[in-house]
Length: 340
Image (cartoon, rainbow, N blue to C red; front, top):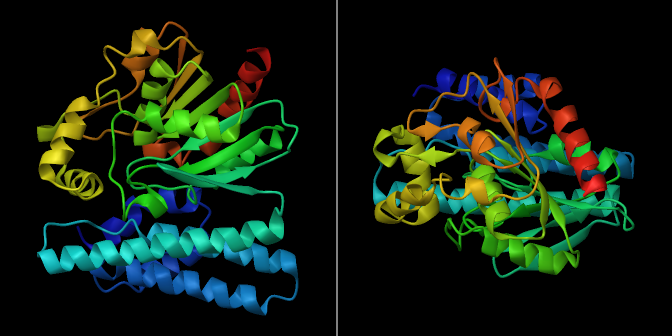
């Protein structure tokens, strides 16, 4: 893949994550090679750190820290190709450093902009609880294969505006935990830890990309899940048919090819979908067509209380169509939890 294709492929994801599209185009236009992706985005993040230190007001400083966190996170999404062991090790170390920097920048941002935000860490998760202390319900935002808690700010903001408390998290193989843990298919064990740490008796879940599988799997096993939404989540993965870039990412996040294949073989909701007792809203983009990935329509059809929302022109994660699903999802989650 050349630089222009990589930049175009990630445009809606980057802008949905909160990056200014004009700044994104300026940064990616300077890339000489796809191998420069991570370093270029880290440099952009550091420029925002400098602006934060020089800001004339705490609010401006907090906003720059927040943007820096997003640039650091997107820096971890560089291309994963079959290269030498030395190159792969260097990529992994650079991604781990960028993820740690994203975490640190978001901490600084929340200390300034939302001093009431609370950090929660457990054996298999790390994240931020935000929103009113007396919120009537709490929603957990679950990231996907190579995403993390710094990415889905628009989803978090939409839920916060509706008076909900929101816990944005990294789980095994995700974000700050990617350097020390690997992906696991029994994600309900992680969600159980999260609910225990939150100290609540019920939660809503919103899962994006592979996080959609994690949410559905958790809803089938964890009785404290009161409502669940999947966005671009897979119903089934077919390892041999997955495109090489996706297999490479999964191999890194799983800790090896055999582990990645075993993980992919277990991503199948055929038997679990009928066991999801809570209300379930499944959101797909009609332009999200990845070979080897079965989208969410069968999940919505097989789940007893499933609903399906298809945005015909939506891409993966529907970053190009927020108005067509995000307000509806936030309203649905708020209303469903209120009536649960």
